[in-house]
Length: 121
DNA sequence: CTGCTGACTGGTA
DNA sequence: GTACCAGCCAGCA
Image (cartoon, rainbow, N blue to C red; front, top):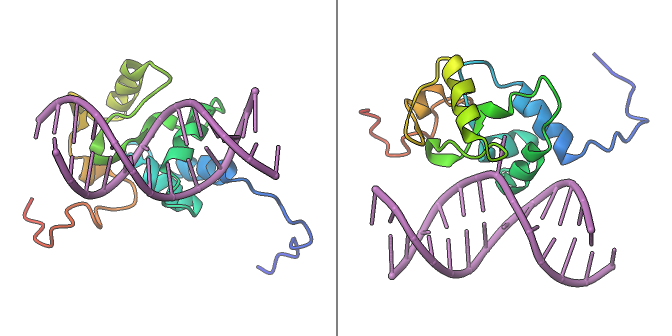
């Protein structure tokens, strides 16, 4: 360990962190804009994340795995149908705009998925 | 530097 | 259940 790279300030922009977080999302899982924002260090920047995703033309960034809160599909440059197809190709099905088992495939763990303290499904 | 926008979120009606 | 409002944040004109 001990990396002597501190000499470079490395102006890591929020966008870099967000893209990196999305890249960490394994196939078959999904994360919400808020989750990605939190992974980037700003859990309140879900809106900003969405804007960044808009420019996620970079390959290797499964932007289609990023969905809105509540398991909503979210957006996809106006081609949400394509997003749906991509998710389905990963084994993720959905009911209308709601992802099925969203809290079960949500990257980050179903920690606060229920938030009800009972967790009785 | 100031202001507006937008692949969002949560709460209230 | 759906519809509307206000709050927050980074990027861009």
